Length: 210
Image (tube, rainbow, N blue to C red; front, side, top):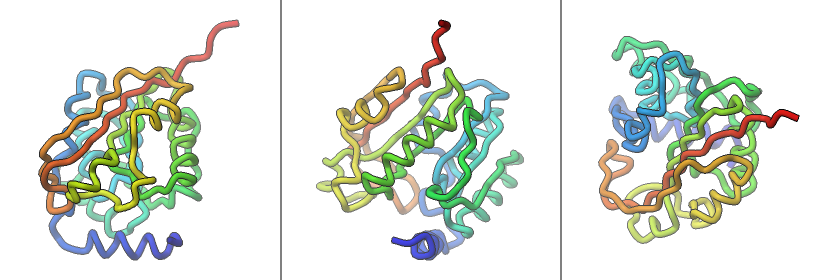
């Protein structure tokens, strides 16, 4: 899919006034609230209509939110305004975006499984690049078992995550927690029903003194 095709696809999915995945954050994020502090900087990758970025801003974080869809970015800005918070919502093709280097305390990726394996490798590398040493990566996705549920996510098994895949991809980070589980979720009309989930919290290692 070309960037133009991706933009048109997601603009279409986000075309309604309602929020496709709801206005509340993905449940994984509030469970990490004790790891977050006001004043931290956060990047919400492919944040869609902004539900996760806005939640982070409501916790007092300084948030940059990206998406390829102009419609999504406009809705993210509107959601932030309704909650009385500021979010730097940016239109960005993640393949060509000028990713900041060591700029964020937290990088969040929730259901960013539009990326096939080769793009995923580049995306993960840039997410790590964007983190400050000691910064946290918060990642949630679907496992291959999700295909049987059919309640959201991509239809390509190669886009889904396993524990082995994530441990390998983030072997250069400290894995704080990695959990596979099934749960019933209700996130707008886009994610509803039993789901095969996987969560990763990982910390970018600080350089060792030498």
